[in-house]
Amino acid sequence: MASDFEEVDLSRVRTISIRERGSKVTLRDFGDPVKGGRAFARWRQSIPEQLAVKGLEDLVAAMRRAAAGRNGEILWMIGAHVIKCGLSRYVIELMRKGYVTAIAMNGAAAIHDFEIASFGETSEDVPKNLERGIFGFAKETAEGCFAAISKGKEEGRGLGEAIGRSLRDAKAPNRGYSVLAAASQFGIPATVHIAIGTDIIHQHPGFDGASWGELSSRDFRIFAARVNRLGRVGGVALNVGSAVILPEVFLKAFSIARNLGAPFDGLTTCNMDMTQHYRARENVLARPTGFGGAGIAITGHHEIMIPLLYSFLLS
Image 1 (cartoon, rainbow, N blue to C red):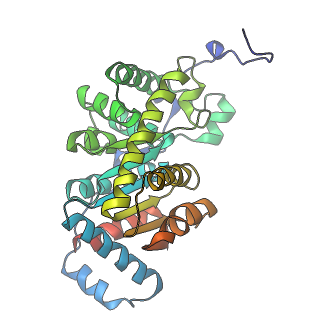
Image 2: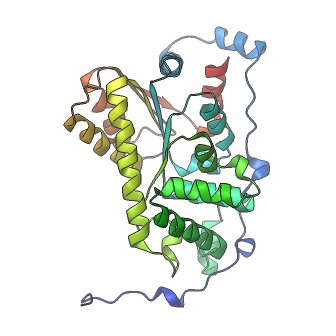
Image 3: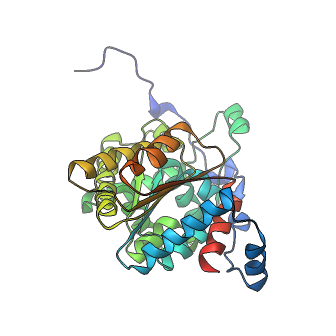
């Protein structure tokens, strides 16, 4: 049987080298985490503890409590801009210091992470490459991800675990900048939640939707297990830069945990983004904290707010 409707023939598309594609972001653009010193501590004491500053202080206090307890959860949900804005090493250092116990991302974040680790560059000029007819067709990106997912399927792994392990096994030249490779190294679950048709590798003739769906479904179950634990032991859930995908994934995982009896009476959630979007506001801040706890909204650019959060935590 076949569909009644015409399908595009992806075998006819033309792929290109990532070097021909060009990239807007390279390793030189990535931030280098530095702990705030005495000058930062004096500045921090000088600013008014009102509104957003109070929210940031409350978030830091909740994260410190969860990390100090050695069994509290600190779940991060990130969008692609966290990677492409050069913030990976901040997240990796927070993993190392116990301020990340699980991390979830959308498909675009995983692709940027893979490209940076493998090639030292990512993020193409979309209007320019659309005009050239090559947007999203870097063959090395697709082939590398497809190989990782094929092996991950054989081994029964999730999508994030499969990519992270592949970067470590291949000794990717810039794996020190990879959130997925670091999560694999530290034994932290990193999950990738795709929506088919939203990411550049879905355009390639080798894309196997069944395999990607299988591994991403496993990641949803892994993530839901951590949300269930969060509801029982308490802790923090942060959504940083995902307007739709991760807030929806979090709400469904939260619903599973409630169905399984998790009380969520000690939960702190935070939405940190340039704009407070509807789904993040409702699905991260309002609905999950209705059983106890607090929701914190912090509005600002990631390339400023994540280093600021890092310094607040470690000062």
